[in-house]
Length: 227
Image 1 (cartoon, helix red, strand yellow):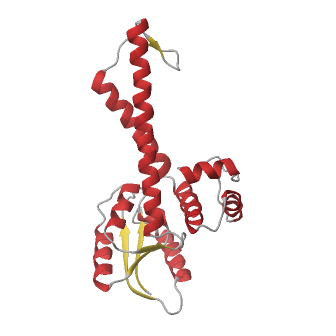
Image 2 (cartoon, rainbow, N blue to C red):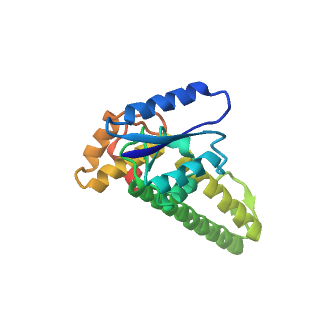
Image 3 (cartoon, one colour):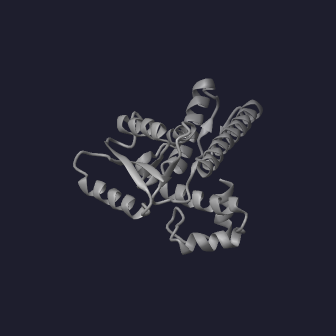
């Protein structure tokens, strides 16, 4: 297979990070594989204007090659950016997640998108309850015990929605460990060969941990699969 390798570090001085990524790529490559070119980016993961990555993608298109990244979080911690890459039709592989492909990440994107919609639905329902209480009693008592006598209309709604959306992005898109566990579990489910109990066992056998650093249990696995 033909590969275009891409590596990224956040600062100019992270040579050890590049060495580690380079070693990961070498271990991934098989004897009949070929790396046509290697592109190195030295920029923050928060910056989605990746000059070298753009070059790598364009070259991969020309060569009909696969983009190869040592670690998924080296590509980006922004889910929307990763899905944009997927939409470019350039196939890619991650050395630390060999089971990850365009199909798997599309599932993750759909799950994340649905989760954002669920936050929006819960926010709308919560605002409806607050408005009803204010209209009926003249006030609403929040969970923190604050007395609310009026809503800030669009400003309140925008702030509420922005916070919810930001929380989802941080938890799903910026958590590479959760993303890896989700991708692994979803890929097993998509194969049709594993049930929830077996997926839980495989998550633990492969060293995946929950957000609190514990082993997965069946209930947590089900939540992971549902997003």
